[in-house]
Image 1 (cartoon, rainbow, N blue to C red):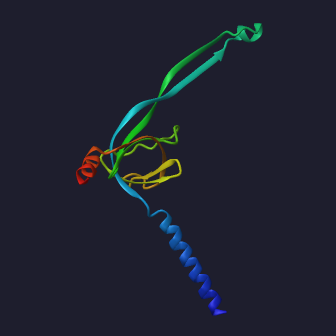
Image 2: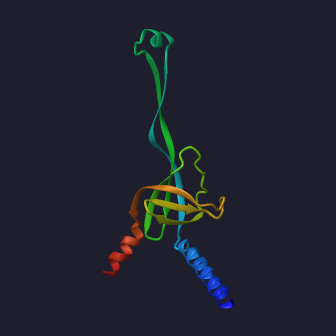
Image 3: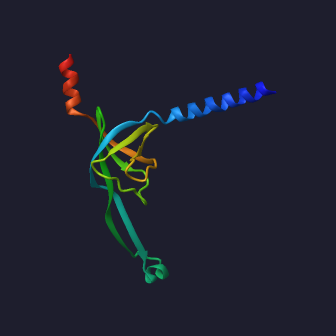
Length: 141
Protein backbone atom coordinates (compact mmCIF):
# COMPACT_ATOMS: atom_id res chain seq x y z
CA UNK A 1 0.00 0.00 0.00
CA UNK A 2 2.79 2.42 0.90
CA UNK A 3 4.60 1.79 -2.38
CA UNK A 4 1.49 2.82 -4.32
CA UNK A 5 1.38 6.13 -2.43
CA UNK A 6 5.10 6.73 -3.00
CA UNK A 7 4.70 5.96 -6.70
CA UNK A 8 1.70 8.31 -6.94
CA UNK A 9 3.54 11.08 -5.08
CA UNK A 10 6.58 10.57 -7.33
CA UNK A 11 4.42 10.82 -10.46
CA UNK A 12 2.75 13.99 -9.19
CA UNK A 13 6.11 15.53 -8.32
CA UNK A 14 7.51 14.66 -11.74
CA UNK A 15 4.41 16.07 -13.47
CA UNK A 16 4.76 19.29 -11.47
CA UNK A 17 8.41 19.64 -12.47
CA UNK A 18 7.57 19.02 -16.14
CA UNK A 19 4.76 21.60 -16.03
CA UNK A 20 7.07 24.17 -14.43
CA UNK A 21 9.75 23.45 -17.06
CA UNK A 22 7.26 24.30 -19.80
CA UNK A 23 7.36 28.02 -18.91
CA UNK A 24 11.09 28.23 -18.13
CA UNK A 25 12.03 28.97 -21.73
CA UNK A 26 11.62 32.73 -21.36
CA UNK A 27 13.94 35.11 -23.17
CA UNK A 28 14.73 38.58 -21.91
CA UNK A 29 14.31 41.79 -23.82
CA UNK A 30 13.98 45.53 -23.34
CA UNK A 31 10.92 47.55 -24.31
CA UNK A 32 12.45 50.41 -26.29
CA UNK A 33 9.42 52.42 -27.37
CA UNK A 34 5.69 52.48 -28.05
CA UNK A 35 4.18 54.06 -31.13
CA UNK A 36 0.65 54.49 -32.38
CA UNK A 37 0.23 52.61 -35.63
CA UNK A 38 -2.79 52.50 -37.94
CA UNK A 39 -4.49 49.12 -37.69
CA UNK A 40 -7.78 49.56 -39.51
CA UNK A 41 -10.85 51.69 -40.01
CA UNK A 42 -13.88 52.06 -37.78
CA UNK A 43 -17.16 52.62 -39.55
CA UNK A 44 -20.20 54.05 -37.86
CA UNK A 45 -23.37 54.17 -39.89
CA UNK A 46 -27.04 54.83 -39.39
CA UNK A 47 -30.10 54.61 -41.57
CA UNK A 48 -32.44 57.55 -41.81
CA UNK A 49 -36.14 57.14 -41.10
CA UNK A 50 -37.08 58.15 -44.65
CA UNK A 51 -34.64 55.62 -46.07
CA UNK A 52 -36.20 52.89 -43.96
CA UNK A 53 -39.76 53.73 -45.06
CA UNK A 54 -39.08 54.35 -48.74
CA UNK A 55 -36.53 51.55 -49.03
CA UNK A 56 -33.81 53.79 -50.41
CA UNK A 57 -30.20 53.28 -49.46
CA UNK A 58 -29.79 56.61 -47.74
CA UNK A 59 -27.22 55.93 -45.03
CA UNK A 60 -24.80 58.33 -43.49
CA UNK A 61 -21.51 56.66 -42.62
CA UNK A 62 -18.66 58.07 -40.63
CA UNK A 63 -15.27 56.41 -40.85
CA UNK A 64 -12.20 57.08 -38.81
CA UNK A 65 -8.78 55.50 -38.63
CA UNK A 66 -8.15 53.23 -35.64
CA UNK A 67 -4.74 53.42 -33.95
CA UNK A 68 -3.14 50.53 -32.08
CA UNK A 69 -0.23 50.38 -29.67
CA UNK A 70 2.88 49.00 -31.32
CA UNK A 71 5.90 48.21 -29.15
CA UNK A 72 9.54 47.67 -30.08
CA UNK A 73 11.05 44.84 -28.04
CA UNK A 74 14.81 44.35 -28.31
CA UNK A 75 16.04 40.84 -27.47
CA UNK A 76 19.58 39.45 -27.57
CA UNK A 77 19.57 38.70 -31.32
CA UNK A 78 16.28 40.06 -32.72
CA UNK A 79 14.21 43.26 -32.62
CA UNK A 80 10.47 42.54 -32.51
CA UNK A 81 7.62 44.91 -33.35
CA UNK A 82 4.56 43.66 -31.47
CA UNK A 83 0.90 44.63 -31.00
CA UNK A 84 -1.49 43.56 -28.25
CA UNK A 85 -3.77 40.69 -29.18
CA UNK A 86 -6.59 42.26 -27.13
CA UNK A 87 -7.52 45.43 -29.05
CA UNK A 88 -10.30 46.46 -26.70
CA UNK A 89 -8.32 46.37 -23.42
CA UNK A 90 -4.61 46.71 -24.21
CA UNK A 91 -2.20 46.84 -21.29
CA UNK A 92 0.13 49.83 -21.23
CA UNK A 93 3.71 48.55 -20.87
CA UNK A 94 6.52 50.45 -19.12
CA UNK A 95 9.10 51.64 -21.65
CA UNK A 96 12.77 51.07 -20.80
CA UNK A 97 12.00 48.07 -18.59
CA UNK A 98 13.14 44.49 -19.01
CA UNK A 99 10.47 42.04 -20.11
CA UNK A 100 10.37 38.27 -20.25
CA UNK A 101 8.83 36.68 -23.30
CA UNK A 102 8.40 33.40 -25.08
CA UNK A 103 7.18 32.46 -28.51
CA UNK A 104 4.23 30.08 -28.49
CA UNK A 105 2.80 28.99 -31.84
CA UNK A 106 2.09 32.25 -33.68
CA UNK A 107 1.95 34.51 -30.58
CA UNK A 108 4.49 36.22 -28.38
CA UNK A 109 3.67 35.76 -24.68
CA UNK A 110 5.07 38.67 -22.66
CA UNK A 111 5.25 39.53 -18.99
CA UNK A 112 6.82 42.51 -17.27
CA UNK A 113 7.76 42.20 -13.59
CA UNK A 114 7.28 45.95 -13.03
CA UNK A 115 3.76 45.75 -14.45
CA UNK A 116 1.04 43.42 -13.24
CA UNK A 117 3.30 40.36 -13.64
CA UNK A 118 0.68 38.58 -15.76
CA UNK A 119 1.28 37.07 -19.17
CA UNK A 120 -0.24 38.90 -22.14
CA UNK A 121 -0.47 37.78 -25.77
CA UNK A 122 0.98 39.90 -28.54
CA UNK A 123 0.99 39.60 -32.31
CA UNK A 124 4.42 39.81 -33.94
CA UNK A 125 4.24 42.45 -36.69
CA UNK A 126 7.89 42.19 -37.75
CA UNK A 127 11.23 40.71 -36.74
CA UNK A 128 14.64 42.11 -37.66
CA UNK A 129 18.10 40.91 -36.63
CA UNK A 130 20.02 43.30 -34.40
CA UNK A 131 22.76 45.10 -36.32
CA UNK A 132 25.36 44.68 -33.57
CA UNK A 133 24.65 40.93 -33.44
CA UNK A 134 24.85 40.63 -37.23
CA UNK A 135 28.23 42.43 -37.26
CA UNK A 136 29.56 40.20 -34.45
CA UNK A 137 28.60 37.07 -36.40
CA UNK A 138 30.16 38.45 -39.60
CA UNK A 139 33.43 39.29 -37.82
CA UNK A 140 33.71 35.70 -36.51
CA UNK A 141 33.65 34.32 -40.07
